[in-house]
Image (cartoon, rainbow, N blue to C red; front, top):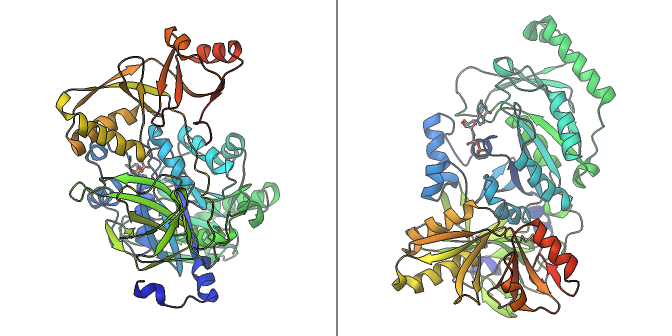
Length: 536
Ligand code: GDP
C-alpha cells in the first residue's frame, strides 16, 4: 500500500471533500467562446496567471487543449481534456469537450462523466445547432444546465429574446440570476436579482488578462441614476420589474432536476460577469452528492469509478495511453488496487494524473467527483467499472452507430502490422469502428459517426503509426447489427446493402439510405435491426 492509502479517512472528511466537488462540462457551438471561457475560469481559479491578450490567449489555448497539430492548423478542438482548479474552497473539475460538430461522439461520452453543464450562448447568435444536440444529451440525463450568455461586449440580441428562444427551442425554463446593464461598449455591469445589487465593472485597464475590479451598489442608491444616466436607470428598473412579474421564480429543486436553467450574462473576453457567474454557479451546481439517482452513494467509503474516455498518444514524445476515470464513490489513493468488473480481476491504478492548464500533475489522492487520467497499458475499455468493496455499475455511456464508412487502402503493404495496431488503438479509444468485409477478401472498413473523424484517422495513422492510407468512402448511410435469423448471401447480392463483420465477428448490415432501411424493416420481419451490438 502507498503511504497515502494508510492515512485514515473519516466519514466526515470524505463528506466534506465530496461536498466541495463540482464536476461540469461546457456545451456550446464552435466559436461561442468556450476556449476563452475555460481559460478565464482557470484565471479566476488561480491556475493560469495570464490570459487575455490575443497573443498569450492563442498560446494558452494551444497549451490548454490543443494537443494535436491538426487541431492547431484548423483551430478546432478535437481532443478533450480535463482541467481542475479551486474556486473559493470549491474543487472544480472542468471537462473540456471537443467543439466541432463532427466530434460530438466524444463529447457525448464526456458528458456522462459530468454532473452539470454550462451552456454557452453567443449573444448575437443565440441557440445554435451544436448547442441543441448537446443540450438534448444533457436533458436525457436530466442534468442541471446553466446558461451563460457570452460576448455581451458586442451588440447582439435582446436578453428577453434569448430567453424566449431557449425556452421555445430547448424546452427548458430559464431564470436570469443576473441581468445585463447595457450591451456592446455600454455593457456596464449586471444586476444581481438575488441580492438586489448592481455590480459595476471597472472597464479601465487590463483587457481581460486579470480579474476585473467591480463596485457593488444597491439598486435604490441615487448614485446609480448618475452613473447609468436617468434613461438607463429607468430602463433597468423597468426590466427588473418585468422579470419579477412575468418571469418564472427561481427553484433550486427544478435546477437540480434539469427543468430550469439559471442564466447569467457576461463577456469571457473582458472577464465582465465571470465572478458574478462563478459565485452562484458553485452554489447552485450539484456536488456529486446532489446528483439525482446515483448508482452509488458518493460518500460510500469504498472507492468506485468508471472509464469514460481513452486517449492514446496525447503527447507524441511519450507515446502514452491515458484512460480517463470519473470517481463515483470514496477516495482514490495513489497506486491503489481496485477490481476491474469486466475481467473480474484486481489491478493497480497507477500513474494517476490530473490536468492543471498545460501541466499534468501526479495525484496522491482524489475523491468522488474527480477525474483522473490513469496510465493505461491497454487494460481498459470505455465503460469499465473499477471498485473496491461491492462492485458498482458504470454510468451509462451513450453509443452511436456509425453513419460514414470507408475502405482502408494501405499505400505500403509492408506496413500492415502498424496499420492494424493503429486501427486497434483508435477503435479502443472509440474514435472509429473497425469492420471487415468477409465476402470481399476481408477488406478493412472503418466506420465513423462524423465524416471529419476520417481525416483525423488518416492524420493520426500517419503521424502516430507512420502508416499512409487512402480512405475510399462507401455510399452507405446506416449500419445495423443483426438480431434473429439472417441469410448473409442474400444481402450480399443486393446493391443497397453490404454485410460486414465487427471485431467480435458479429454481422452488421450497411444500408445505402433511408429507403433501404425501411425496405429491410418492412420486408424482413424475422430480422431485428439493432443500433448497438446485440447484448449491449
Ligand atoms: P470556441 O470555439 O467556443 O472555443 O471559441 P473561442 O474561445 O476560440 O472564441 C471564438 C472567438 O470569439 C475568438 O475570436 C474569441 O476571441 C472570441 N470571443 C470569445 N469570447 C468573447 C467575448 O466575450 N467577447 C468577444 N467580443 N469575443 C469573444
